[in-house]
Amino acid sequence: MKVLFIGGSGNISTSCARLAVEQGIELHIFNRGLRSVDLPESVRRIAGDCSDAAGMKQALAGHQFDAVVNFVVYDIDQAERDIQIFTGRTNQYVFISSATVYQKPPRHYIVKEDTPLGNPFWEYAQKKIAVEGVLMQVFHERGFPVTVVRPSFTYGDEWIPTSMSIDYTPVARMRKGLPLVVHGDGTSLWVMTHASDFAKGLVGLLGCRDAVGEAVHITSDEVLTWNQVYETIARVVGVEPSLVHIPSKFIARIHPQIGCGLLGDKAHSVVFDNSKIKRLVPGFRCSVPFEQGIATTIAYLDAHPEKQSAGRNAAIEEILQAWRSGSGR
Image (cartoon, rainbow, N blue to C red; front, side):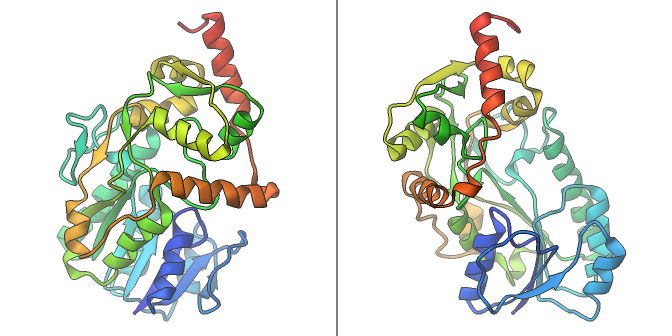
């Protein structure tokens, strides 16, 4: 099978690329080549910039693919570009959407693929919903072979997933004995998925005819509270965490960029019904529990100090200061 990944060196796509090659797929990757990622030597690289539609079309001229997976489509213009480029040139086009598209606040904490879409809090989710709509419309009208895949909070070698950040900030603060902010009372339910587990589902969908014209989410079945997420990270680090619980709406007033991801996603209890991916990819199971996965991530980042970004430290301090002073209430 000849497959193209657009992106291919990110948090999710790197694990997918490694597994695709392991399973004998002839993998081509189209990106700018700016990130140094350890991928198998057999990966065929096509240099190009997705922001240059004409250049992208030229770079891919003459190629036919059994499947194309685009990890970096965020708006309608990018989707329409791909429809133009890949119509008649692939048997399956996989759009990496997001589980943030599901209705917020949710009507029920268990989410299925037919759960209504709608997120008034987060522009990122709204754009993903719009892209899904365009791709599904062209599927129904012209047979464009789209499969929509919705990951939830998926982490790999370089992401430490918390409700405030994805970088090294929580570990850095824990090791200094500094407090961390947890939204609400920390008891809402959440699901963390390791990128290597997500890859099993995604790669399993490639070439699956029953997946064309369908939307499917790929997540772990392990359910955690947010308190447990932070406590697990602290246990791996070997410290007792100092957690300050602050209402999500307060956090959103002080820091809107963090707030949209809370009110539009993480502040709600969400558990995913993975029946559909298990039906489409027989034998699919997530095998990396969060404690094991996050231990691997922290060990990797500890071994690579140059990647220990703590960019959310200032934001957390700002939120804590506002909460202690009573401003914004």
